[in-house]
Picture 1 (cartoon, rainbow, N blue to C red):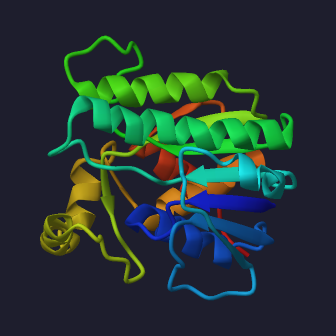
Picture 2 (tube, rainbow, N blue to C red; picture 1 turned 60 degrees about the horizontal axis):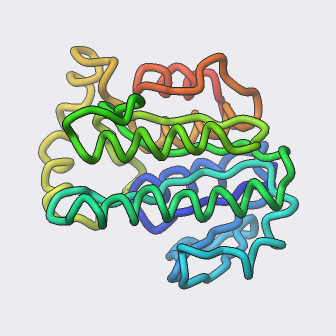
Length: 227
């Protein structure tokens, strides 16, 4: 497979990238970002692009892709509902629309959403409504398949650290407790490794479910064993 990752400089995106580099099913990884990553590998091709609300100028470079792993996201804390909508819905749909146009129904789109997302788009929480609106729009686009990943707690592994300081402090505290959390709350915890393996698995083999919880993600990751 040839895949593209959006958000490879973030915690989840970097985790997905590392799994792609280790998996023989992935032959090439296109990274679309505003700045270069700190990972170097023969599989990687980096494409620097500054305007993440318009991808028409680079759309031809998407033509031979098989899958997109969309790991970009912002916290809703500290920003207005309008800005969160712009950075979540508008930005994601700008990329997805260009990918759909370039690949003509051949591409599988995997989107990192979140536990509690509101598919009805009518709930009280603005972030959940906006995530739900984004998911619904993605599911309507002419992709080969689209999968909405809704993790709750994600434990970073393989030396990955969050760029958000207070997030990383929480991961430092909870990291040693992860085995216990996995035992007590298997429906709500996963890892960056599992996220990457599950995305590769659904891109290659599909899934009967389009909306995937942490429990689904862990099950799919266990099914995917890199060569």
